[in-house]
Structure formats: structure tokens, C-alpha cells
Length: 434
Image (tube, rainbow, N blue to C red; front, top):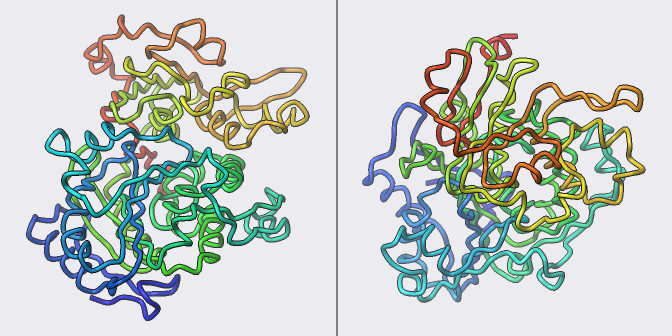
């Protein structure tokens, strides 16, 4: 197996990949690959941090961690697992055990020499500053869309370690194009300023434009630039996973960018579904891994490109009772198209732009003027545990989830029922061919 010449990875290092879009890796192939990963890494006497996803991603994380822990626990000076929350809600011990072990054990029992901690993004003392993105640099990266100075803050565990390895899946993503790689650092374990700036840049480009775009998008360039300021050697173990299951199409390992690039190329063939015509209505059935609209909104992001003008997306999630557990101030602004904010910037400039970005991503494309008001391209309807009063106050349509029969939608030729929504991106064949 090839690894980079710098200790465990440099941005220009090489990577190794196994698997393809045409099938799934066998247990033996996965074990062999992870054995090579474990043996190739010189971690003896080093402080190792493994950055892992939270429960909002389909990922057989236990299958990745067990062989690495077995190989490294007695060799490394220390191993810590850091959950890349971004600004998601923290996971309790019980939630971590349920996510990782599916009822068959606990972290403390299985990994006694590897503590697991949440990225405590709400605590200023969590961070260290490794650099800054100047106004001029961000203006250059964003192609003139955004000009602000952004401090590069990252969890102190990253800079206090000797080796950092990000482990997680790669999927089409509404802000960066494809997730994975350095995204597990920024915004995964980064400061809020970086999260706000990167997500607002994605919103200025628009979710429907950037999602599922291969290569280095402006947001990917921004997070890669931030990662280049981290002196700790970096590596990535990237997975291409069948959504909602533990089946693995491919694994790649090496320097973050090259490992991610290999995985993203395969993800583009496995996680994008093409349809011939736009749909009048889409009902996205939200799985339990998304517990609030902040995360369940992926049921909108991933289908927006195939909704006809004037059409509707229904977010069907009876288990969801809140808009955002970690961002209550979202209810002060509601859900609106991008122009609603940019054309009234004096009203909204004091809000974190990460909130505005989420708002625009869920509400989708539209226009705004003082004369004509807001006109959105499609209707977004919630069928959740959130009351009708709260839902409509957020500028969203409402359906009582108790009155919905999914089978009725499945028999409607104008409706697409999007099961296990949130990770598969839908696109029109005509857009791909144009």
C-alpha cells in the first residue's frame, strides 16, 4: 500500500483504494484492506486522534474501528475518538453505544483504551487558532461572492495530537459538493466562524448548483485551505457506503484530498439517481437518524433538482418534534429563499450566516422584492411532530402526518416516494446531458 512521504499524509500525498461502484466489498476484502492500513501507519508512541461521524451518517463505524483499535491500542501513546458534530447536538453515552454497537455492547467495554468525546463546539475553550483566511483570500476563493476575514479555529485535540485520521463516508453534499476528507475537520471539528462562512458561501452558490459536484468547489477549496494550516500530519479513511446499510462499495486511505477524491468519484456513481422528467410532488420519508429539521432537511436538498416548477416536497418525519435542537434562534427568521435575506441584509446581517444558509437550503430557490414580496419556486411541506401553528410560522406548509398514507402516494404517477431520504441525490438526465 502506498502512503505519502510525510508522516501519515500530506495534502499532496498518494492514496490507496479498493472497491468499485458495481458491487460491495466482502468481509475478507475489508479486513485485508484495514490490516494494510493498520500495518502501514507508524503510530508507535504517538498521540492519535480518530475523527469519526455522528449518528446522522450511514457508516459501519464499528467495522472500521475494531481492527484499527486492536492493532494500535497497545502501540500508540494514546488514542482518542472525536465525534465530528459540526454544530449538531452532542451525543450521550447511550446514544453513542446505540449508534456504534446497535445494542451489542458499550464503548467503555469494547474500547477501554480509546475514550470517545464530542466536539464541544459551544465551548470557546475547545479551540485553538491555527491561522486566518483573509478577506482577500476568501474573496479569491469565492470568486467574488464573499469577502470577510475568517479565523481558522479547530478543536485542540487536533493540534495537540501527533497523528489525525478522519474516518467516515462520502456522500453528495449540499454545501461542499461531496462530503468527506477535510470536511470532517472543517466544519466537523472547527469553530463556528468557519462553519458560518463556508455554509453561507455554499448558499450563495446555491444548494441545487453545488450538490453532487465533483472536484474542488469553492467551498472545498476553502476547507482545504483551512486544513493546510494544521501542522499535525493528516490522513483520511474514506468509505463509500450503501445508504441505510452496512454494505461498503469502496474504501480509500491516504492523504485527505486524494483519499477523498477516489471515494467521491465512486460516490458519484452510487449515490446519484437520474430521472427523465421533473416530478410534481416528492415525499421524502425521513429515517430516524435525522432527529430535527436541521438534519432532516437533507430530504429536501437531495431532491430539489428534480422538482417541477410549482411542485412540492413533503418532509414526512412523524418522529421529528423540533426545527433545531442546537439553534433555537432559527425560529426568529423562519425559512426563506436566499434573495429574501440578501435583499434585506440590514434586517438579517446580525444573524449567524450558518442559520441563514440552512434556511435557504430547505426553502429552495426563489425571488424577493419589496414590491412583490417573496416568491419561491416550490412548496415545502412538513408532515412532522411539529405543530401546524409552529410550522406555518416558519413560512412552511403543513400536513398532519397521521393523515398520510404512503401507499396513496406510491400509486400516484405524479409523485415520487423517496424512501430513506437524505443521502441519495436525484438529478435530471437532461441536466447531465446539457
